[in-house]
Amino acid sequence: MQYFQSHTTFKLVLTWAVLSLSSWAYGFEPLQLDSHTGEVNLSPVYLGVYEDTEAALSIRDVLTKGNEYFSPVENDIINLGHSSSSVWATFTVIDNDPQHLSETPWLLEIGYPQLKRVNIYVVADQKVVQEYNIGYGLPMEQRELPHRLFVQPILLEPQVEYQVYVNVMRKNGSIQLPLKLYRPSIFLQHELSNNYIFGMLFGIMGAMIIYNLYLCLSVGSRAYFY
View 1 (tube, one colour):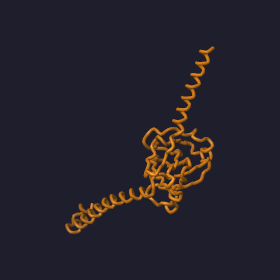
View 2 (tube, rainbow, N blue to C red):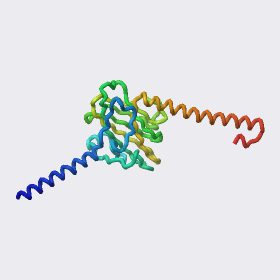
View 3 (cartoon, rainbow, N blue to C red):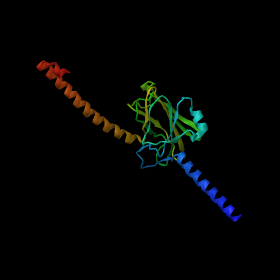
View 4 (tube, rainbow, N blue to C red):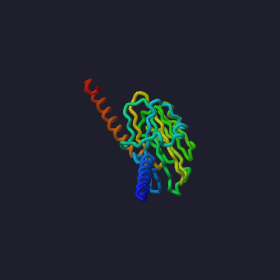
């Protein structure tokens, strides 16, 4: 009898441990932001993904089921290849910096500009508190930041746990979801560096075009024009 009770207790403990590990694995680790965080690549540790092949789910459906739909991301970024599915990604984020003013947003960047539909939902206590639509199917003027990529400011109150859902779709093309969070100051530094590099590149190309046009007109050879 004592052996049976011990064996039963062991099985219960083992079952609890397995369920706990499984829950942790599929609950996805919350992203903890603090005063030292300037930018974060949203790696598979934080991300869950679901491919809705029928494009039938709404945010209400997703919230009803919680994380049951989502599975861990296997690669460094979400990459589903050629797909016409509606793709959902989610992560949990907490801003632990008490000095971070609620009026100062974080910037969520989706670094793949070929997505026709990009819907972002910020959820707290199972309620959608922020909603944004910024896919290329909509005019650029409707974005808060008219950027070459999809960059959306989101407000995160300190010490509040948010669940962020990103729903994207592209007809007849590959789907990737490289996700990053930036402080505005760090994002601006990146943009200045990128603009400097692009400026040098296009400046050199422009100089070569002008020089070859000069050779074409002065020498009279059509090869320089081509």
